[in-house]
Image (cartoon, rainbow over all chains, first blue to last red; front, top):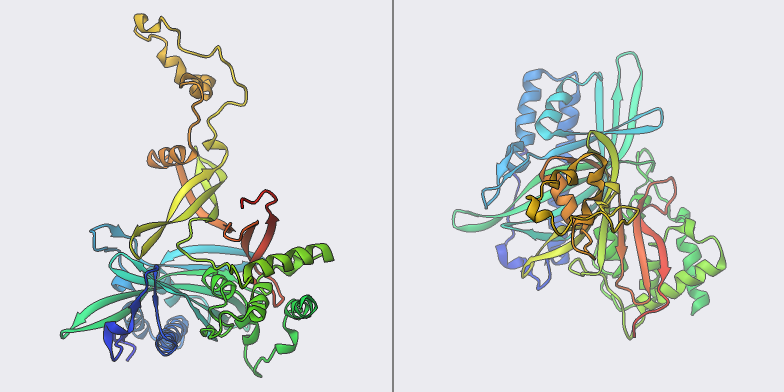
Length: 203
Length: 264
């Protein structure tokens, strides 16, 4: 299933989303729960994929296949794209954070580069765990689509062959892009990921 | 009523230690993660009593006592160093939840600002600048963030010392403005504003746009964001992100200023 683009199809399609006079879409508790569950599943799959890509147990061919399927969850498969007005937009980026001597160092990479780098990461084993806690913001209208942010917490554990260990906890906020598309004459909500921001946490 | 609120207030600021229920083997303290104000969107949702800590909709938004608890949970507890300051924050919370005129925060409000404190490169040197942003209506139900001003040494074109003698002579036109090149030469260029009409004050947004447009100012990254809210009558407050090993973390009220000369 993870090889297909996640699509949100609500039984009553677009009518479930009631545009407010304000700037956001209002979801009922049930819709909100469904939306959150969908994002949660997508994120869990994404983090499992990251562990697979980073693990030395898997072959390069397998990792490349996982990267390909992971990128399908990102806007335009992680490539730069033109919006509806023709404006060229940058590919989604992943911010990374590393703790060295108690100081946080941040870097920002295109998601494709990040995933390719992860394939050759120096750890023998990589484990990435996601928190149960997930916060989803309101959905805001942005041109021809809607955007929201999802915040989750991630535990990263990288084990070296000689027993050395790197671990950290980060707060990640990911842009969620919701596009309304027509599939077989029916309106569907296609959900894709955008940029990912990171903040080192102590909790 | 105030006493009850004070007890609730003390409870909220205790770090929610008693609530901690981390499952055995879990790497996260999920209760603390839930309590944490994870996005500004969540700050607003709690301030307005729209969503609980689980992110679920709150049915009774008019419940003043509950709303006070949520507002109190949004204060940076390190600010509450004495009873006088605590009373100030309580008065603020009461103003927010006042049943006759409750205050709610909306994304579309024009009276809140985001200050993005950035590292930038200007003339090859690393500098710190601030960019100020407000929400701007694009069309009916669509908004965006818009840069409304900027702050930093390079945006201030007005010389520290005013010199009325720096001017273009009234007869220079007949000389083909032959000394015009002096305006941009050497240190004299710092006086360029003197050659403009009296009372002219260059706006910083135009200076910012000009520098960026011409490739003279490059924004490297945002270090910090400070939000400033002016929706509560008689108060201005700022919201910043706090990261520490307590239950009082995330986006919290970092400063509360009382405005004495509030307009009726």
